[in-house]
Amino acid sequence: MNELIIDLSESNPIEFFGVKNKNLAFLKSHFPKLKIVARGSTMKIYGDEEQLGEFDKRIQMMLTHFGKYNKMDENVMERLLTSDKSHEDMGMGRDDILVHGNSGMLIRPKTPNQRKLVELTKKNDMVFAVGPAGTGKTFIGVALAVKALKEKRVKRIIITRPAVEAGENLGFLPGDLKEKLDPYMQPIYDALRDMIPAERLTTYIEKGTIQIAPLAFMRGRTLDHAYVILDESQNTTHAQMKMFLTRMGKDAKFFITGDPGQIDLPRRVTSGLKEALLILKNVDGVGMMYLDDSDVVRHRLVKKVIEAYKDIENRN
Image 1 (cartoon, rainbow, N blue to C red):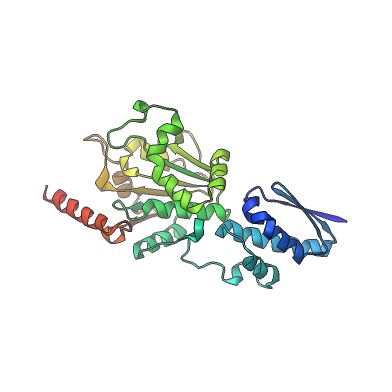
Image 2 (image 1 turned 30 degrees about the horizontal axis):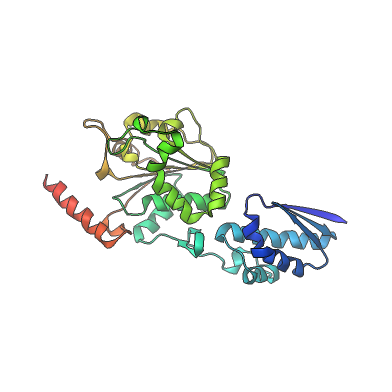
């Protein structure tokens, strides 16, 4: 009797098998000639070679679907188990959907400029997304990173930002590094929680598949096979921005966000973002996207607030 072993450690076996192993029971009913044993994150299947080959093909389609959409039910299983088409041919995805988030949330670009930003990342390994608060820069960046991780185009996601903001320095805050970082990284955590189930997100962070660290921790590293996001880059100095941009390693993607209107650096200190936009504007492989008030996707009042402040700042 032949044996096939399926590793489910990258999925959530409890969610994949369903409540009271409902999905597992359905799977067993579809392959009555096979003996299927599930223990923890491992499945062992026993039977003849041809049946095992068919099972392996179908289970991989199911795992791909589950990894992409974060859900599995009998209707989906029925389609995947009986269709002659591949997962991609079944119309399971649409081009504009970046990630299928939690609770059926569809993460996609919402404005023309956000769509242009997504297209820009397909053509360039380093992209700058510049615009005011609420334009979805960080959210789109995180969605693109999660998509790349799910599709196994990268091995890890690294998210960083300058530690000094709004006049506060991490050194003067209480607690260990994680506790100090959490308030600054909250927008990142919020975005990740929308896109990745809580248990899987915790595992990713514990294993280092998703790393969230201050910019100073990038020094001396070479970031290979990673999707790297530098958030709030307007608060980098010349030296910090140069250090970060030169960390780029093999098969890496760099996504840099910033708002030149929210610089918290001391006076007379030039923003590394502003400088980089000038220095790199004609460099092949570097894309730049400028979002504006029309891309604000928060409460409708946010757009009016931005316009009001811009009017005052222009007068001064």
